[in-house]
Amino acid sequence: MTKSELSNLLHKQKLAFQKSPPEYEKRIKSLKKLSDIIEENKDRLIEAVYKDFGLRAREETLFLEIFPLQDEIRHAVKNLRSWMKRRFVPSSWFLLPSSAYYQFQPLGSLGIMGAWNYQILLTLSPLVDAIAAGNHAILKPSEIAPTSAEVIKEIINTNFSADYIHCVTGASELAKDFSSLPFDHLFFTGSTRVGKMVMAAAAPNLTPVTLELGGKSPAIIHSSYSVKRAVKRIMAGKLFNAGQTCVAPDYVVMPESLNEEFRKEAQLAVEKLYPGIQSNEQYTQIINSGHFERLQALLKDAEEKGARVIELGDRDAADTSKRMNPKLVFNVSSDMELMQEEIFGPILPVLNLETVEEAVDYVNNNAKPLALYYFDEKKRRIDWLLKNTLSGGVTVNDTIYHLGQHNLPFGGVGASGMGHYHGYDGFKTFSKKRAVMHQRKFATTDFLHPPFTDLKKKLINIIGRFSKV
Image (cartoon, rainbow, N blue to C red):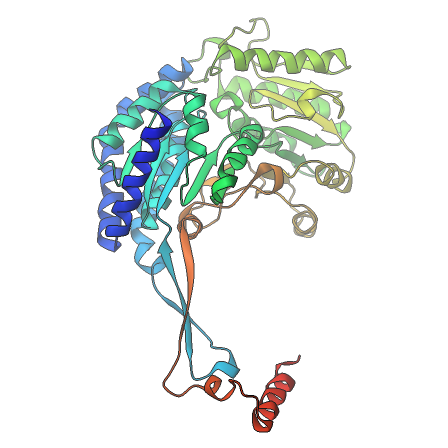
């Protein structure tokens, strides 16, 4: 699709929206239709994801994409009427007897750019919020996972009119054109590097953007916490999708005295999670050879700078361009590339710092992470860590599952993104929170217009005195 064709499509959507913005009934009907077509095409979607990766377990796609998406739709349908309600607020005393309220209104036509690692969820989950908020939308799935992109395109375009919801596919040039369109809001999921380009492309149109990016999400283990339990939960979260998850634990921070126990438990955890991992049909492959080579380069750089790499799983089986054994990396330092960029693969560096305070200092001296994981049972220390760190989200004593909380916002901060979605927060992101003041027939403000007589001056002075703290 050319840029001209994209512009025409957006123009048609905007005209259709202006003519008839979706009301409650249409939004509910569209959400239920989306749920139905996902269910009807579930097997096709799962197979498409499998082909894109070369191998990903059906259960992983069901658990991490289809189920959360369907449950998000259910949550929106259940709560939409209350989200849409007009909300009255107290009027400022000097403007009485006026009333004041706000209401959420749809923005118009939105652009949604998905991500390859969870193509179904990260393309269609923002669409759920966009529909709930009453918008029209154009989707652009990631070209890195082309099979699932084409299935999404087909099932969307055959079930919705193009002037309401439409999906386009194409390579990086189309993505560049897409992000430069004058959408009423642009939503992007992907890397920080590409996020900067998306934001720059949107800037000339003053298009507001939501950027769901990535970053280095730490898992901090207090010395008093069960290493066995921490490792089990860290490795489970790390190895979903072979580490190709934006909120996967990117590195571990713990005292050096825990290293050997951590290594042993990590090996046991991998053997239990994925027996015979190199031939295990439930262990996801690396998306493509370019990504595999990038991961190998990170390991090589770390080893050259003094790191110790520990193979987990089938330690006698060599990595291939699609299958990569999980690895622990000890003796890491900040000058290593794997401690500077998001890993996005089954490599887990271990940074040895002796206290939680040191761990917090390290996190705070680097780019703000998309997620932070802390393992501790002491409420006082947990509260202190929450107070003294800033990240997109937090899970205490587990990893990644804060994503599944529909009543919590999901989104990064700083280099890990801007803006939120999921549930009510997604509804708000794709809405205008519009302020309304309703003035009465009798209004005190009528007595405060020029000319400022002596009486009016006294009234203004009285208002001023009562307005002070």
